[in-house]
Structure formats: C-alpha cells, structure tokens
Length: 244
Figure 1 (cartoon, rainbow, N blue to C red):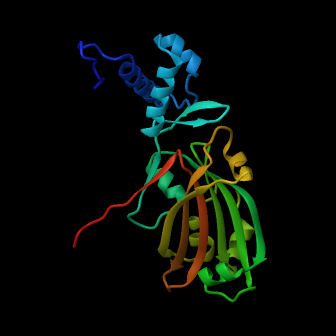
Figure 2: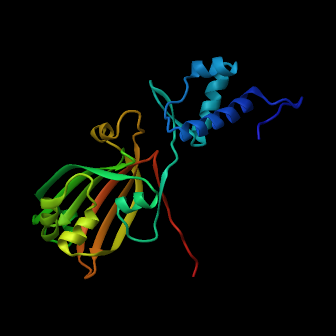
Figure 3: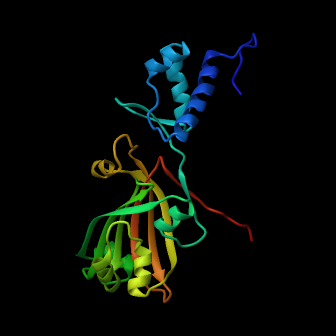
C-alpha cells in the first residue's frame, strides 16, 4: 500500500514506486527488458529527477530492476526455477516448464585431464578426457554456459554424435547404454567474463548463478563433471527440505 502524508494524501514518491512496480509487472508479462529513462519518468509522472532516482533505488534494492552504468535501467524477468528433487538434465527441466530447450555446441575435443578434473572423474592426471562446451537455450534465449568433462570411454562416443539441440543425458543413455543415477551438486555465485557475456547478448548483468555437478552411473562410476554458469537475472534454484 502506498504511503500517505499527514494530510492523508499519497506522497508523490510512494505513488511513483507503486506505479513503477506495476510497470515492471507489465514489462515482465511482455518480456520487455528496457525500463523508461529517468527523463521519461519525470515527464510521465510529473515528479523531479531526485524523486525518480530515489524510486529507482528502491526498485533496485527490492529486486525489480537492475542498472548498468551508461545504459540505464532494465527489468528483472521472472526467473526459471529448478527444484532439486531428482537428477535431471537441462532439457528435462525446461520441458517440465513447457519451455523449449536447445543447445549450441561451442567446442568438443579430447584434452588431458588437469589435476582438478582427474580428481572429479577418478582418472589419472594427464589421461585423455572429452571436453564439451555448450550454450544452453530456453525458448531460444541463451540461459546457461556449460563446460562438461566426460570420462574418455563415454565422451569419445558422445563426441561422435553430439550436435546442437541434443540432450547429452539422452545421448549417453541411448548410445552408451549408461544410466546416470546420482550426482553431487554445488551452487554458488560469480561473475561472467566479457567473452561469456557476449554469448548471452547485450544488457545481461555480469553476475551469474554457478553450479558444479559430479555425476555417477549405476555402478558408482564418475561419468561427468560439469561447471555451468546461469544468467543470474533469469534462473534460480528451489530446494525442498523435510524434517526427520
């Protein structure tokens, strides 16, 4: 509810904040990112630039918008939420939300395992592993950057069959006869590098939701280690916790 002054009239600031919150919802519904400029808001609502800036500060603090210096304000779109109940692929997550999923293969090659990758895949350091880097899409919009390392026997088969818009987990099931049943997953936050930002398009904030996943098959063998960077303005995780 908007604030009121001692005379019972809604203050210009509170009125502006309330209307801008409604404007954000309208822009989210139309999938529009760009927010009106300070000058446009001053003219539309008949308030000073000081009042507009104060209202924008409030919206930014509350998570309605974000601002990029020299470019203006942008609306946070409603985030895609992944619920951590069971092991699922990005494609399965998107399909469960009635969204189309897609991928663009950026690189697929044989490399030598670093000490970190060797530890995650339970192989010898320097042994061959397959690197698969993909840009993941939701409703044709870039959503995540995945850097996946696969053990060589599995990855070498994947390397021969992987193309754009193919589910990796489905490919592993069909071509390798392997069912992935368990994963250890960690979630954090970080920054996107300039070249990574360029893959997501203009006006994307530089912070990201970062996830690592170590995935195992039915025999307890580590098959995959993936590091993903999700757009922080479009993606969130939901974890359901039960008491004993």
